Length: 369
Ligand SMILES: [Zn+2]
Image (cartoon, rainbow, N blue to C red; front, side):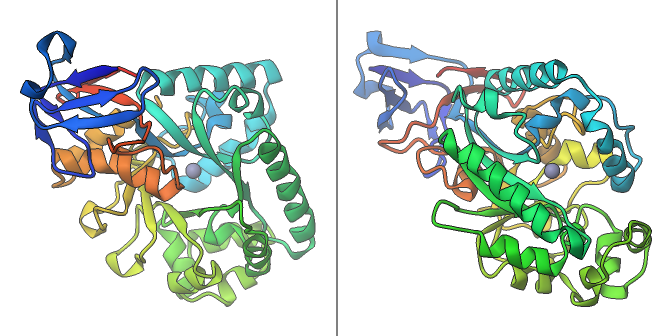
């Protein structure tokens, strides 16, 4: 047994406890929480400076894009970013795999214990089958032309199978409202089964997304037309509520929300990726609009970030919101675990095995377990 204590303990399902003690097994299972150090013999205590919180949940990442670090130019906007990502396959497999491996090592070092990871390929399978971290794999589909629908779904199903075969959680998800036509959305929703827990969707990442649906014009409208996109993408959708209807009441993590307004939000979980938003669009979401119990955080991929660190994301949120430390840590741990359905993670509650991070003033993270 280990008895860990620091200046404050942040269980996250209860208020912070000054000089509280966390009792865990050698394997990391939470056995008990003590309000006072006096309840434990002093020679058993491991005393640290700083605060203790559960392992971080990276609710949105693209691990398979790790080799594209630095490729996209900053502040060129989302459409430029998407075009740059077309170069993702112009690399040797060994370079792609090495970058994935190193990115996972970086996440572990930064106190991350679970990841919501977007997958367009099977490139990350070799690393995930080592089970170093827990992953919820979102098998992402794009489709803007009717003739491609069956091919896209078949590819998604076969990729989902590969992940499930190695014991991974995997769900077929739509990329974004503008990149998935309603007929394809319907097929994606019909393939949600008993092994699935939640969808993920990139939302409100670009200003012209609202304009596309509300006005049927703008930058995104032009871009889609140039790509010969089917007009059902905007014709049958007038606002964001129409997209939510298409998801048929399934749980969905809405990712980015950089241009979302309060009236766009629903009872779903919302994921913010502030470093990536600054990198691509040079803008942040309005943090006043979110329900604090439903906001989680992701690093996005190394294609739009310089590191995979939840602590770095928290620093940006902290500088641009009114959240207190307990709320910031809930965003980093508890809410992400709930959004992704990781019942064992996110809080220091008896029976869970959430990992333990030691933080010093939001400056530095040390992994204790
Ligand atoms: Zn993303």
